[in-house]
Length: 107
Length: 117
Image (cartoon, rainbow over all chains, first blue to last red; front, side, top):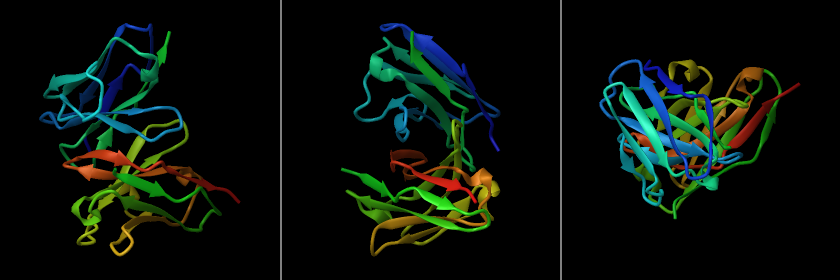
């Protein structure tokens, strides 16, 4: 199985700050990488797919990048509603696997 | 609007089975594969498997092959997951999620399963 190592496990950011979350795959996944946001008590929501494509309706302050085994999610200008857990997920090979998650809080 | 409406919380005794439903609306049910994902309390996400409602074909993560059974009823646009031989390890929230390509673009609200004697 492809292991997804996500970092950091948690971080806090001030409003307006730019934050980055990273995922490292145990092997190359050819940009088959998605990012999800999960707010407290809610289901995950798709933010980014194919490493850098923004899902419809997702604010443009969210962006994704990366290649090979390293991928990142950037939030340019933290907003109150961005406080949530974030997960990466590879879809290069089955079984689909997720990163362990990053808890993002407002400082 | 795409909606996935899951059934309510379940409590099961150790060794018993539970069945969770996921009713789809707002799209053609047979056009998309349905995934199931487990989230243990305070933990991350685990992919359980998928079902193609049109053909009934399935694929499971190795860990869940003896635990979960995925089915779908095209007459009611509903997908199901049955969890058998329940143990405390099965206490979790279970999500259904529509697959678009190989990502999950719409999710149910989740159904909690508590295993307790």
